[in-house]
Structure formats: C-alpha cells, structure tokens
Image 1 (spheres, helix red, strand yellow):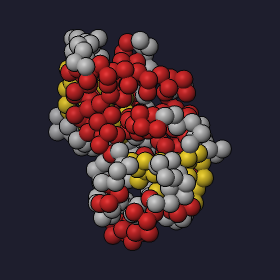
Image 2 (cartoon, one colour):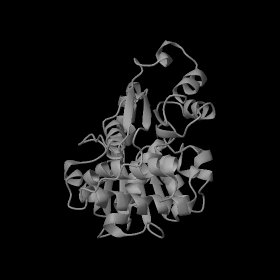
Image 3 (cartoon, helix red, strand yellow):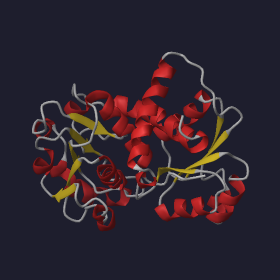
Image 4 (cartoon, one colour):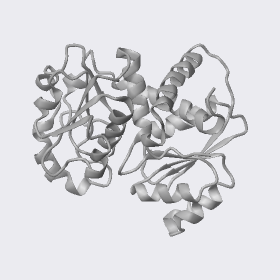
Length: 301
C-alpha cells in the first residue's frame, strides 16, 4: 500500500511507466476495449476545494475500470463540523479501496495518509498538484516526445503547479526556467530539491526564450481572492501574450492547467494558438489518472 502525495513519491522509472501506461489505456478507450480491473472497487473523493476536471476525470476513470466513485463535498463529511482528519481517514479507509483528497494545506493530506488503510491520492493541495503534472507530461510526450533534455518555461506564480514542475524537472531531467514577480517565488525548500535543473528569474523573456514548452496558471488561486488587486498589478508584466510566446522555440507548445482567465495570465491568441495543447492536456487528466489508480491498486501491468 502506497500513497501519491507528490511526484516525488515516484521513482523516475515509475513516472516513465505511468506515461507509457496512460497512452496504452487511452488507446484502449478510443478503440472501445472493455477493461474493468476494478469491478466492485470504490474510490472515495474528498473535496474541500471544488474542481471540474479533477472530479470528472476521477469519476470517469473509475467507471471505465468497472468501479465507482463517491463524491464528498465539505457539506457531505464531518470534516466541515470539526471532525479530526485522523478520524475521517480511519473511517473512510475502512469502507473504500482508494481515496482522493483535494484540499488546502498539504499537511492535511499528509495527516490523512498517515491514518488511512488504503492509498491516498493528492488531487491538489496548496503545495503540489501532481495529477496535473502527469497529464502535462503525457501531453508533451504525445506531441513532441520525451521531456528529458528539453527546456520548460514557467511564467507566473510560484504556486503548487510550479512546485510540481520543479519535482518533474528533477525526476525527468529537463531544464526548468521559472519567471515570477519579486515576492512570488516558489518555496525555497522545493527549489532546493532540484537546484541543478531549475533557474529562477524575474524576466519572463529570459525564461521563455528558446523554450520547448511554455506554461502558466492563474494569478490568484482559490483562497487568494483577497489578494486579487495586488496580484493583478504584480503579474501584469508576466502575461503570456503572442509577443512573449514568439520568443519560445519555433515548435514550442503552450499549456495551462485551467481554468484560464483570458486577458489576464494569457491572451486569447495564445490560448487558441495552433501550438496550444490545453484541451489535450485537460483530457489527459483522465488517462493519466487511470494509469495512476491502476498502479496503486493493481501494480505494474
């Protein structure tokens, strides 16, 4: 029994395996193949932060595998009434086979995992968003091949997505250039884990120049709405527009984990660019998460 709380819970070879397996599962689904290794198995989904892609991808993944998923909002559990995380983990993990938690503080999911009898998946915390990175890597591999040795530009907030890109750079061996405003850098402890692969700067042009992949995210994440005005002013020079994207390599891709605020962190022209792969990236949440669930419950296939 193992958990998936960050990409660092995988060895590099396991991450490579998940991407390969996701491509196989995607092809099987497209061909209409019936593959139900999780019949009569149940995924419990604990949402303290709402999401479209996370919920739909996990529910469809379990349906495809012949299992089922139970959605639990803050109003559907005793967490909202003050039940300790430890108690919820103890009870829920006696009834379901695997649990996905989408919450705020990373410490919450760490505590949940310590008291769970079944695998726990990080659907997002304020520190990491590893399931999205599985989808991003899968999408790049589909379009351009391996990420190893490539150059990736992260433009914007040093947030949970940025942290997971730092983890991916270390595991996959690509160069990550992070451009963010002063005061919005990634956590130093996270950066230190991949110092040889990551460059931090405050000029988006420096980060994007000759990149193979350009990635951004919203300027104010859920729970940061009170900082919107200050963040808008700080991040305005970090908008990914056509002029900035043109500095990337001639074959560079653009990604965004969605939802996107067109006209803020990215322009309409870049979102709809011929080399924007955001819709493939969104769909690939399903296939990457299927491979992850299968690995945690069934092992390597």
